[in-house]
Length: 262
Length: 284
Image (tube, rainbow over the protein chains, first blue to last red):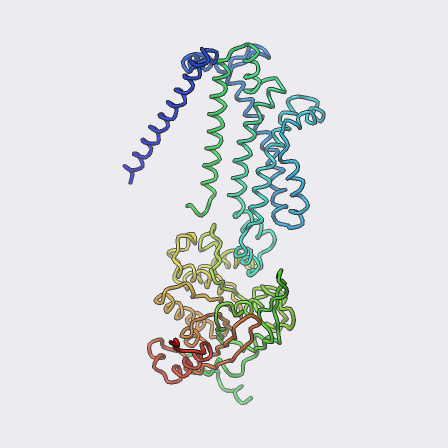
């Protein structure tokens, strides 16, 4: 059994290396076709090691290490995501547990959900009088919808079998919420959170391009202005890797909270 | 009233004890249950009146979809009759209550809780005034009673069908209801497990001095006769009514092996068969 799992891990690692090989190959091809206008893997790698040699340097407002940029983006995302979740989860619970709540709130959600979060940026600026607040604000808006919708539909889909247990044994409202509704809804909520953080991480790049300051999105824009395409490629790889790690983290959380897979 | 001075006979020595001088536990007065559907009104059961005495075991039997479960759910309070009323323990049934324990058809255990927690939450909900240690003692007692102590920390998904059934029964017994409602409780079990569950159920009933009233839905004739004092045979739905109430006057305690040869058992069995099936052979 143990041998088998080691074997699996090993083959998974080999597949991953193969996959990265394909990526590097295609990338190199694009570089050759564009006659070096887009920097290839080798050039990018050397810039990457250069940037990582001193990730946290700080030479004034427009010259900070890649680590600084990344950390401030992550903090921004989690602040906005946290605030959004604090609104979305209770609202979703409310929406899912009452038919009236669902009918009243669902149209609002359906209208606002397809709006690009960037459209909220000016309103954020107006409200917070600062780019920083506006960026966190759009991340918050972004994080609302997937969590809200998943929570609401999770709660709405509690099987009548489970509800009947509460009825038959006279569960108080509090006991119903904590022992039946939440345990059933938590895997759905986490799925929502996982989707939310994914979208939030995508939106932060665009948001920071608008807002400026410190952050991985701004770093991309700044590198473009400085015509350092290698840095942009590095940033793309880092953004992708962090996104993957965030997703893996929430995936692990999802597994930890699902009762039927244990 | 001459029996006031006589000591009450021991439960197991007199099988009449639980049948005489008993008050009414459940009274169903001319109820009808109908649902609104897109195609109009659908009547599940109608013109049903039934009286069940305290300590009786009553089986509701009939073909699938004949409204047995609906009828039982009017007693549990999960379904409200469109007309007529159900009186349980002297009160008109307005909703589910802890005086009526329910064992659901599919057990309905909460999958995220251990066996112990599943029972504890029900006990905690019903006995709000008891101390924590008293409540834990009750749960331990009933888990012990259905022989699940070694499995008390398992999740329902780790249990076999028979074990889940025992948890559901322990949960229903633990809140000490005077009426126990079982909805096809042994339907999903294999014949061997079913047989031992019948014995377990009667054991639990005996331990409580045969004071609990048990109503069960089933479509198993042998099970109905073996367990009950009365078998209520229902017509086919929709708009099902009671076809006949058959009394089962067999001595208790009953023995699964011997009972099958009892002439009375055979007579009741035949009667139920002919009530349930119009034709006994395939016409060529």
